[in-house]
Image: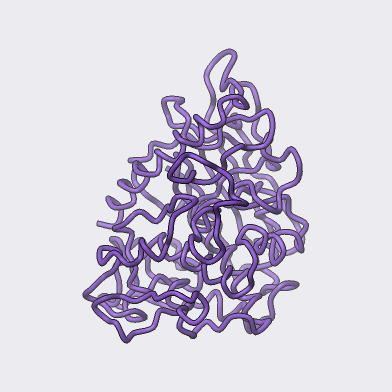
Length: 385
């Protein structure tokens, strides 16, 4: 089951926290001087012209430090939707073709070994129809090579050709980031800041890279497990000395070791966006305005889709969890039969849901921290587990 695979990946990713935490011990603050940390529970409602806090309770991962709607938190897979906005902007500018073989951008070969003549496209990657699978580690060391990772036959679904079958896979995102870097000659975090975050006036960034202002790291929501152990983003007195997955020798020198278009995972395009509830609501407002001012209505419509709808046999629906998906956009139907698009975020004991109702022209974002990582996965719609 996809759910079990996700649980295994969460456990595997905890090694990243341990390595980064060890490198950052001189900057780490105490989680608590007294008492127990309360889980953060935040919900914010928005329309195209208003943002309204509905629930703001608990601590920002440190006892006595009350969470606010302006504290940046790692929003996990909601990051994928924001990446898609950047891709669509580059497509509008003629710098990317969603249906072009990504090999033509990368300069190195990406192929499912069972279907060597079938090209992999950005459209397939964004809609999880690339035939890539999370059966290999998609978190690549700073000095590592995504090409080497994808050369492993275990990374591929050999039963379904690219573009024919949906199966949600985080590994699509590092490849998307590598394509963006190769096509533009610009580092992923800086590209996302230039295309999406800065134009909207957001103080947000991927893996504490470009887009976040000085001192933003200090304001982060620290993600803890239910027992109080650190899961991600330890409290810091200053900049994070190692916000990326370190190199094989433990180094975190991004400028020296990171090669554009060869890694793609260093800034966690699949889940590393740090953004406040207020700023994410501003992205929601863009979506309620059909993409304006960043996207044309045509690009927005193409992005939200859905480009894939489950017909009973054309994908892994994960026991009904996935029924429709666009380009970086998840679709669901609520109990009343209303359709919503957005995305879920589930990692490091955070559960989040970011949802827009295009008919009623409203949306909301909610998240909860200190959730048992082995609890039932949900859309974080009516509530978060």
